Image (cartoon, rainbow over all chains, first blue to last red; front, side, top):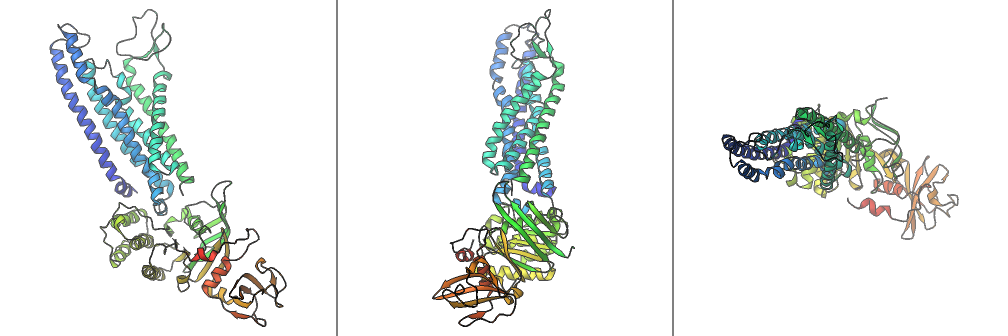
Length: 279
Length: 316
């Protein structure tokens, strides 16, 4: 089965590899520039928390203006580009076979339809998640000098596009596309449906991990939330909920777990459609 | 009993819970080494039957057994060539055969490569560049090299011109006589099948109308030509509607039609028939047998005014 998967998906694998390499190359290139600029700021004593130098605000503003583009480009761009890629790979997985009627050939070889689906989805999904993990590492590396230079205050603002999160979000987008393709039996509408579903699920999962996990609250005597904390707009003024910086990795793991659970559930729906609707 | 390669008992499939039945009450046995033609007009249930036997569809009622087990458990023994010979258009011929080699434990690589070479198909050619006949041959090679015990071919002759058809049939049956597989293939091209198949199954409206050994079926049927109005008015038959399957004197009128001032009826006989005065009796040809059963009126069916004959002869 692995030879068949490789033969059928190697072109897609090459495209995804090219895309991730380009994304990471771009991010590392921006990171190199930002690191150099941060070194200049550091030499001038202008890093956050150490504003001892003169004209620091102007230098920091200048740095912010120069690297502000990274927020839409990478913090939003990485998960979206990966989701679109995953949808484009996932939607035809069942739907194209049905459309070309080659499913009648694929499922009448000596491999059961279930094994065919399981191996394909596991292999291609794992490949895409790996691509997401690589891109997430790229964002993580890029984000270091940006928070030092004051474009972002901490790792939190790019929580959903850094570290483990892109691996999970890519897997969800892929699963949604596979299931939508199996259900609709046409790849292109499946891509659209998968992306709409992805945005909804991603937002819901993000909200869940932000607000439904155990949160800290500011106490009346506190001087506000810590600088490295993750906050979100809420109604109450007294006890502001936040996640302290040391919660970053636990919450990343929680987010990944939520996304992977969603992935498995959606893939199970996809199998149901493949079993009942495809012939 | 595992002597039957394919054994269907009361098999039926319904496409949705309240939808129409694609096939109903189909009882059919295909022993090893037999070549069975499955004939019927479009929408008769031929593809449904083959999909059920190939394990692509579950039986809603009844049972299907291939070599004694459910088809989904016998995939390595079933060779299924779908209608229109769909293959992955962007793959090369050798990759298509590679897929067969990697997914089938009994794959015969020599058979596959020899067959492709003998047909003059370049292994490096992409499927999208092949002609319809070449693609059908690659699809058949994919199925034959699997070395199945049951070969299911859905309209293998559609989209082939008459010369390609003859070449395809020759190469198919050359391959089959060597291996002794059971073959069940559907077609609505009636004329070419007589020489090559042993058994006949006629399907119409999702039901089996006729099934059996062709020679025996021809011996037990007669085409009888008589004057207009016969058999309703003739003395040899009771005055009944000819198409209601009435039985008398050990014979049964399957169907009758009138043309050129004569009535021609297909009649099933249980004993040796002596035609009455003014009647000519002859053994039916293959076509007459098939078309006679397709014309047959069934009590559970609306009286069909449409001419099934034209559907049967029309290519896909």
